[in-house]
Length: 438
Image (cartoon, rainbow, N blue to C red):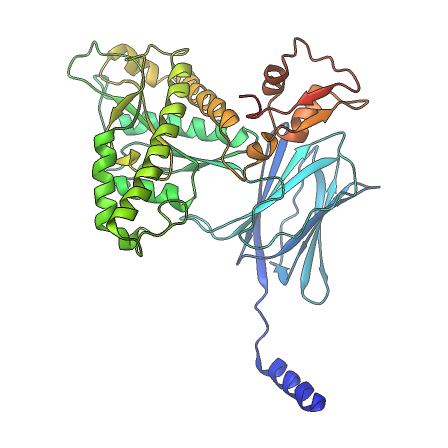
């Protein structure tokens, strides 16, 4: 019997095809003073291990059942790593070795395909002069979150586009162009923010349907949706910034729409499909989801409005509500920012000013950051820190090294701990910024 089983096993092994190897293609990198991001294009999701070695400093990435495309260009990043070496191992796996120039704290995750690219392996390196060598990281399977918590995803929607220019100022400024410029600046700021990642809904001069904008944000599992516009009014004297959330009437009409199409509403409310629920239960679930989403939207909108008031006059000093279609996602907190009145000649000039565009983007980010520091989504790096993690100051620590280690801003540590200077004493305890006590 054992012999028969063994023969069957051999026969099946001969018949079943081996899993096709994952090919590692192009490699791209972006860097700043505190972070370097490597993105590897891969032909499919894959399993991998990532760990550090010392003497000399190296970062090792072992990719299961993978091979690298031939004639890969040599790649280095001054101040981070000298080269990437590759080698086959175990008869079908691939090892990547980064010869580091300094100690780093790594994080990694798999990105699913989007409209522009396929599967990607992302490796982030954070400067960390105090990082202990030899730490290993758990194996990561396709679709799993990074060990240190995932990034918060912010969907940035530049209004209008393509054949829809939006409002046009007296100086012929088109809304679609200035809001895209502001959106791109906001994208850059979000991507540099520790623990956050931006997704652009519109990346160029083309039109996307309002429902498709929501759909794209949901495909990227966005934690927040921000639609950027530049208002217009028949009176050129109208001026100031505004922030909108969905009105109760808009929420009611949207709930009716989803109920009418509930067979297509799978995963609409946190993974709960509505197709097998009766109308009453589906209505209750939608109502609960929308109420929580609108409350979150109103909270983040208030923080963004407060920050906009520091760089621009406000049209109204409270969050407004309307039935904008792009705000109608029942499961993503959504806000619409009217940056200024393009119909006002003075504000039109400011909207064309790159420095003012950046001020508006920074104000929006400041409001978003303040919201997520207090209400981080579960499973994110911010949420893991917000559980009240404390750090005992060691010999040689500085505020900047601690901030880099935990991927937070130095200002956030100062504010959370009431620090009046950056002088630290060995043995003192720092609270890592988060919701504790908030």
